[in-house]
Image (cartoon, rainbow, N blue to C red; front, top):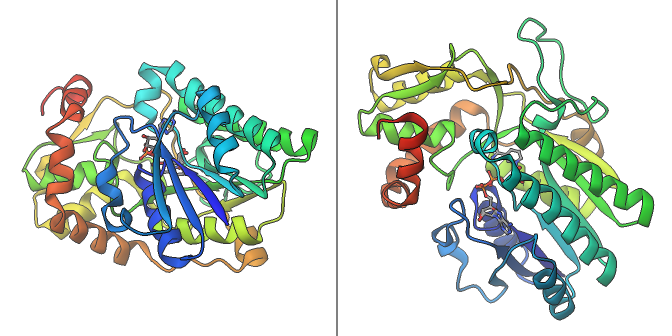
Length: 339
Ligand code: NAD
């Protein structure tokens, strides 16, 4: 089995590459990544010399490059993680999101259609469903919840999902889609909430929290997400969507306070900043389908997972300090003005 994993130098993609390289020594795992600001080959250090792993640098939206690669490699599967993934960046530069997330996906789908494939898997997000009201804790996203996006990011992901499902219906392409809630864990780029708060709290810097911090996210440890995708690509039914989430709902403020407590830092570091335009209030996944159909169950609860994740950031300070000292720090200054 030869699998092209796109975006394998990013947060979730690199965790997935580790998972697959370790679990399936007979598979050939090709990591295809453009190495944008979010792609980091340091994430692949533990597997870079394995015989069943290779890295290829390239752009999923470059049709000539992708078709040449498929001609040469003839992959059995594609698992597409590659994306512009940060909502804030999508608000300042939506076009980059259309290019990679929509056009990159359709380029991969066209290559799969041309060269044939056993499975194309699209890694998507619960954000395609929009948000839920805070005063209706009884509501959850299911796979049949209508798509109702809020941000340019989620709109580009929803567009990609629709193309993937259309290629199944129109051309019979063997596809699956998974829509996961917010991930946390090792190798999470430090512009996202959890690593941002850990890195800034350790430096006793102010901690920017949008609005009043009441927005609710449903957190899942990245290795539970990787296990779920592994199940979907091997056992999921073609043309189907699977929601992935572990019922770990927390407000952003609760998450920040949990991290401060674990690091023994004061809550006075918290600084409420002007809310993100169009900020979604609550995400919550109903994972019944993947649990009952494929037998998936998350291993981590949030309290254990977050403790281990904080410890990982403490043990791997060089990893995130290298990132913060590079291009990212300029971006942060532009967004928040004080690093
Ligand atoms: P990330 O930003 O950490 O990684 C994205 C990777 O894609 C980077 O390595 C980047 O270099 C690469 N990339 C970007 N544009 C590319 C292009 N044109 N060609 C090739 N490679 C390109 O993102 P992440 O958080 O790991 O998310 C991975 C996927 O999972 C995304 O599709 C995202 O929408 C989805 N997702 C993320 C979360 C989350 O909580 N992070 C939750 C649900 C779904």
